[in-house]
Every structure is written in structure tokens, then in C-alpha cells.
Image: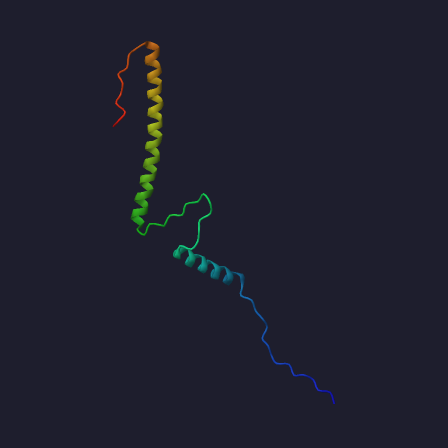
Length: 101
């Protein structure tokens, strides 16, 4: 008489779909980021998002205005340099400007 070992039923090993893995990793990443345990890659500055949408809109407007004013300042400095060279050519004396404003 031959005895055979009885097999017990084992359900097949089903791995989660890729989307579920992505969701789990994303959830972990967000959790670690909120805890401050993630470091930014070199050269990238991570700033917290403003909690107030009106504040972020205002910040954006101020950054745009700041950029515009920087360009205007650069243009004004070029004009002043040209005026200085012209006054030297015409031999017009200029009064020194007090730089401590």
C-alpha cells in the first residue's frame, strides 16, 4: 500500500497591481516629507506651500513686480553710464553723488 501525502489548499500568491504599489509609495513619501525626513536634491530649495491661496497669489504678484523693477533698474543704470561717458566727452563737470542713501 502506498501512502501519498495530502496537499493542503494554498491560495495563489497575488501581488497588488502596480497602481496600488504607487499609491502606497506616494503615501509614504508624503508622510515622510511632512515629517521633514526627506532631503531635497542638491541645488533645489523646497519651500512649504502657503496655506492661504490669497497669500500665494500676492506672493506671485510681488515676485513678478520685483523682477520688473530689477529690469527697470538695470536699464536706468545703463542710461546713467551713457550719460557719464557723454559728459566726459563734452567735458561737463559732474557733481559727486552721495552713495549712502
